Length: 518
Length: 74
Image 1 (cartoon, rainbow over the protein chains, first blue to last red):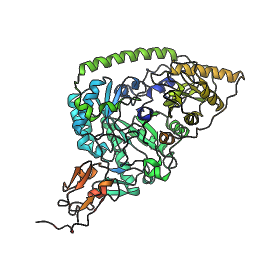
Image 2: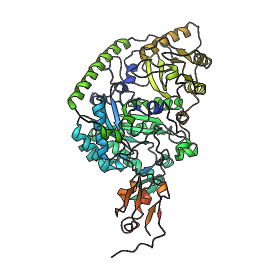
Image 3: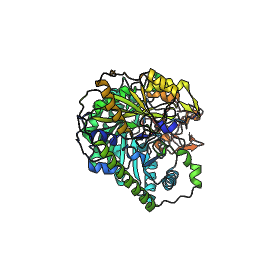
Image 4: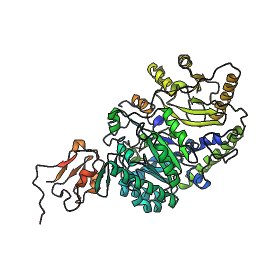
């Protein structure tokens, strides 16, 4: 965990939504996969999210896959205290090179946080969202959290505020949250069954008393669900995060999904457990593994219905800054922001952002024209493909430089985003890291093809040997269009008997393995 | 006997600071310390010592046996 790697925060430290990715599926005719409720021609970028909600989230980089190319967010680490203990968290652990929820380099006072927000906002005009997500629980630190929000509101009323909480103290603070006009609240809910909760939470601190076991989990869950209902009633957007822990709550999360859905949560984000012995968490020390990408995908698929599932979360640090995938927190340390000349100019920010919107709508119209083609083929074949991308929806990364691969499922219904796989970079400073190649291939060997802008001879041969077709034919072209073109050709090859379609298994690698390797 | 915080184990999370009914806990160089003159073991306030109950690291807030048992001061 000592040496910082290039992949660091940028590959695993961020969180983005998949809402607009679903759009690609919904804008196509043909058979409807995944239970989507919208047919052809639904408004671009919105999926089946109600118009009012879409207005609120369209510029939120974490909720909208499309928005994350254009808008930035920042987290301020003002809330170190927590009121519950989770088996996947270690409060002693605090490392600058790690990118996990709860990790921060600096703990800020509300005044420092507000200054940092102004410093970032004046340097990064596309910054639209400020969140508080720990390193502890924002609502276990209500004075610090709300003071920070108040200070930001005074100077920068246009910034959206959000927070991420375990929910234990949420019902007590709901009025303040409403009063401060907090836009989004994320509650981490890992269970609706206290017996399962007792395996995840050793204790909670509630009303001046420490509770343990089933009693603790029951209190926590009652408060969490009450919180969801209260937020929904007040019209504050509520997203649910759940940590998927194989053997403990994996199948149970389907129940959680139902429970939060009917109470009014608008988005469910199931994230894989990050657990390694060196993290020093109870789960890490016990050898509790995280889910494989295949297990995570299967769970996402079974929860997918009339509520959106986030598939793009990168489980970012509690002090990440900037566009997703490009953490700029090093530019904004307390020492540096104290010396910065900070001018918050609402007008110039507005102009900058309206230009972004113009660009976005032009791009959306162009994409819709591309994607309204209906598939006549009725093949049942579904394949996964990996894409090396730096963003903007393009195949624009070299195989050797990729810090992550985005995985898509292709079927005759369209292109569906499935998730991202962080990997150790193969080429570092011009030299190939041979030992990384095997890990990379194992992490994507459930994919039939990998789309790259460029690839060297050696990895090409190894990929082919492992049954993954390297495709560099669509370098620098849009992902959706290119992958569907390849898929059409793939189906033709299968139908003509040129190749035989083979089902591939689950990659034998899970996220924590990759992170510990970093 | 007052409580003390074992500095090497303190994560500096500040959870204890706001729970202490006696305002006996303050930050000192990134970790927290208990003023033995102010600590009442929470007797008369709560059923259990709040710093112990809220501390995320077990056995970090412990009885400081170098002090006499707490007596109500005049």
